[in-house]
Amino acid sequence: MFGADKGTANLLDGKKLSIGIVQARFNADITDALYQACHSELLALGVQDKNITRVQVPGALEVPVALQAMAERDDYDALIALGCIIRGETYHFELVANESSAGVTRLALDYHLPIANAILTTENLEQAVARQTDKGRDAARVAVEMAQLLEHIG
Image (tube, rainbow, N blue to C red):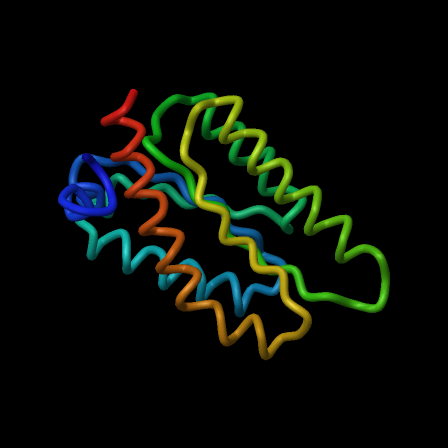
């Protein structure tokens, strides 16, 4: 079995991978911290810095279109979506959270490409700050593991 038991270490070997990251600039303090944690973890997993591409977009709703452009290039083993949506007083939160997430998922399925979704959806800034580092690291690990897994089963 390749996965949860013997193969997990192999799944987290990023030495030969090329990873694309799309980062929303809205709530930049949070998304910058997400990026730093994600980038550091990718390097720790063996991904070479020259094989990590970062693009920035205005906000979470723009993340899927940039991911799509990267997926169409067929240069990446996995992609990562970084953003932060904090609930406000209007329905806009639900719209942005639902549409950005649906777009990311649809692209992963359409392109058969792992996309780690680390677009935070929180009630307040404190929740976002509490999650920014762990979720950034988690996104890197998910991207590397899924790229390796799909390579193995594909």
